[in-house]
Amino acid sequence: MDELKKAWNELKGNNPSENIRLDINELQESIRSKSVGVIETLHKKLRLKTWFVWGGIVFFLGIIYLDTNPITDILLYIITVVYFISGIILTKERKIIKDEIDLSKNLKTTLETFQFKVKRILRYEELIGLILYPISASAGFIVGLNIEHDNSDFFDTTKGWLIWAVVIGVLTPLCHWFAKWMNKKAFGKYLKQLEEDINELNKQEG
Amino acid sequence: MNEELFLSKVKEHEGIINKILYLYVDTQEDKKDMYQEIVLQAWKSMSRFRGDSKFSTWLYRVGLNTVMTFNRKESRIQQQPLETSFDLEQPSTEVSDRSLKLMQAIKLLNDIDKSIITLHLEDYSHDEIAEMIGITKNNVTVKIHRIKDELKRKLQANG
Figure 1 (cartoon, helix red, strand yellow):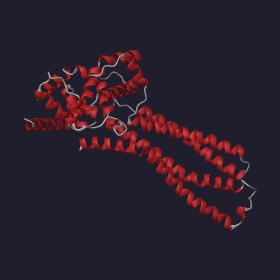
Figure 2 (cartoon, chains in turn yellow, orange; figure 1 turned 90 degrees about the horizontal axis):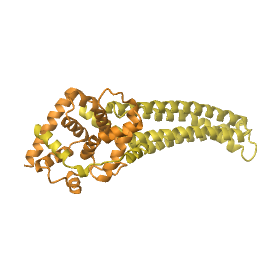
Figure 3 (cartoon, chains in turn blue, orange; figure 1 turned 45 degrees about the vertical axis):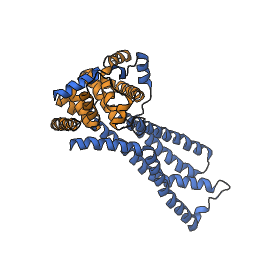
């Protein structure tokens, strides 16, 4: 269809006033600006998550420093270690993801890999959370018990253990649901857009 | 490639970015935003540019991929009905009516088809288009044929 090529050349050569022309200063500004694309947005959210993990470590160490209950301290140390390991994994994963984002490569592969890895991080985070919620809830429970006066004999009775089990039994699924909701709120619409882009590319393949 | 060289190369090939903007973005303000986004993404990908392909080909690929992955929901850039967009910006009267109709028809295609036909119009080989879009060469051939048929039909329907 030579006519099509002719029309294309005719049009692109006849709209100079509509063309955007940025001078060097504006181009320099561009490469220092912040992207609002879906990939960058998701990446920024992962960075925030990483900072949240490192911030959590500082927070838990602060509580350990202030609190003198040895059981709470042990529980908080466990949480801190898990946070520390998670922080390292998250930082490394983010770096890998960042290195793999290359919009000059095959778009479908880039999007699929990116989506897979972001989803994997969120899934692992939710699973690790499931382990941590009972521990952190227990730590909080014990801190709460002893806040006014020493209640170290609370666990000497079956009733005490039952109350603790109910608190953990309620808080764990609740926190898990909340974490999933937060992730959906923060990442959901962007992951959905990625999904739509991938589906569109897959449709073309099919 | 250092920043200065990169920017001069972008400047030299700004026609490529404008071609992409022409098809995908409607208003001048949005075009400027998208131009900057493409330059930013190109700069971020620059360290991985090995020179296996021409800079222009590489920039085209980054540009199209940026446009296709742009967060449309957050952006002011909306997919508007074509008639509306043409009302907003009337191209030069030097352009023939038939060419305008052809371009209108291209603008109505979905993002991927638009990319494929644009790359084809820019004389990229089917192999190159397949690599850029991420579909097989056979699929590119079939699609170009189908898109051309569709465009012909649309043109005929519009007289």
